Image 1 (cartoon, one colour):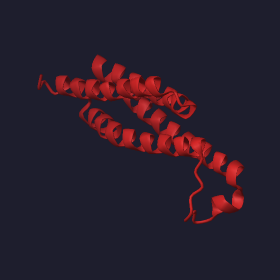
Image 2 (image 1 turned 90 degrees about the horizontal axis):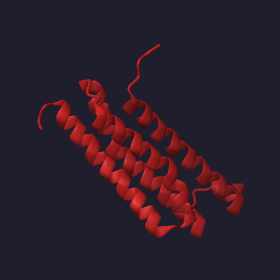
Image 3 (image 1 turned 90 degrees about the vertical axis):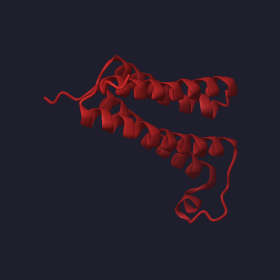
Image 4 (image 1 turned 180 degrees about the vertical axis):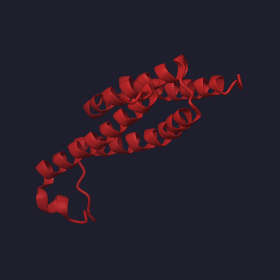
Length: 136
């Protein structure tokens, strides 16, 4: 069995969360507006409160993956794994798991704190990379 780093598992988990978020968004749209609208070009979007939050959640996950992916790929390629990268990856994954529920529910302060924790974990991961490269 391959020894896959925790950081890479966290990246896979974030990808699964994005796919799940896209599916929830699509299902919500079908139930709200019907299959005909879902299959259309959607030139005139029909957005409600929940639909807007689901859309923004998906965009937030994509943006987060754009920041997290290069860090993980670099760490794995360079063979860097330390407490900083490990715990940062785990923390980031947990924030990504919880975030959709908090965001869609509309809890503004908790959402912002959770997003901030995720962002700090990206900086912590970067710090771990710098330690692994002996630059700090």
